[in-house]
Image (tube, rainbow, N blue to C red):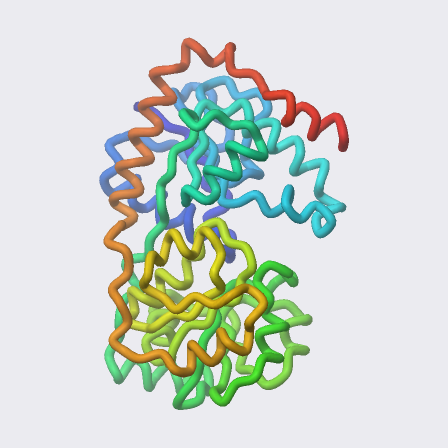
Length: 324
């Protein structure tokens, strides 16, 4: 089976980039399909867009789209400038033969908010990259020196190029704590205005694994997530996790982390500071598992190509564009 895979997001530094890189690598290594990295899917049997931006309104072959979350719809006031683009992408999503989502929490929202039939939704979780595992004391000491990290610290991981209210990074820095807080990820000038924290900037996977390993705990205050990959990565490195109690994180972590109410940042910090090792192991799911499940979705989409013309956007999706 010849599959067109939109590899443009592999260059992104946020979670969609991580997803695209890891999935593409796993598909190449053992996905049992012929991959063509392109967003122009002619002469292929299936097209997979691993991000909403790549969804095509008029796709010449059966289309598979990965929907990571519904933040632009749930927080439309924060996406005013790009809302028309998002609405058009959601309309394209409605026309996809299959929609991959990372959790049942997102599947429920897609079914309820976008009227996507449950039989067209495939829940395929994400996983920690192979490089993210517990590192030696020598590696931890080396990364601590490289980034001037304190001996004892809590860590937060994510992209900081633009302020994302969902992540609540600024609020986290103001919470009461006794340990140092290290923020890991690419930054923009606004992040350097945060006080009382250590910023590492972008790091390699080997450096990230050592930073996770050396941390007392990961603190993850997001008030909304589609999956929440950093907690899974931290567990893969043996690091305890304290996170906000939101549906996707509750589903993914499944008792492996301490969860606190969304509004209780002081409680979240306290839970992270009191965390003890050893941390529970991460979910057993791997990117190899994700690749096999994704290829099965490709097969299902290809088998239904004869019904491609019968797939039409639901009333609610059409209304999204009409209201733009």
